[in-house]
Image (cartoon, rainbow, N blue to C red; front, side, top):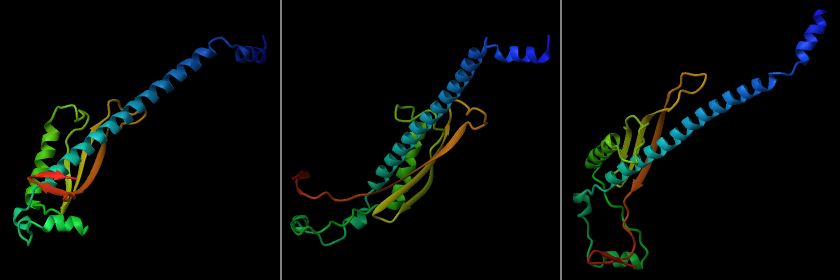
Length: 183
């Protein structure tokens, strides 16, 4: 038998070619599922880190600087006059030292919590920066997230996520009668 006829016979043979395609598609599908699972884990962990940072910022912004808050010339008519004249209220002062402590405590609680809000993929939430000017607060955090699967064809098994939140405490407009806000 001639070699060229044998090679043409082997090339034109179609048995088994479909199984190679099916195996290839199977491996591509599994690799895509692994990558999608890792991406979903990162997105959920990012939201959990953002919630932790927001909770820490809210806890920190509510630390009232009483000495700055209770100095001034406010009277019984200050708030109603501000509402009538549409004058902005001054921001509520924040005790920055106490805010730092409260932010750290909240992040510690989130890092050690096993509740449904914290993802187990997040390793530890770290405070990277806190800016406080006495009326507003900006909190920056980061955490490492472990992937459920190692990314195919690489050694990547984790990522660093960051989150930054800024907030301030403002007086809401309205008339307050015995601690109840009237619209």
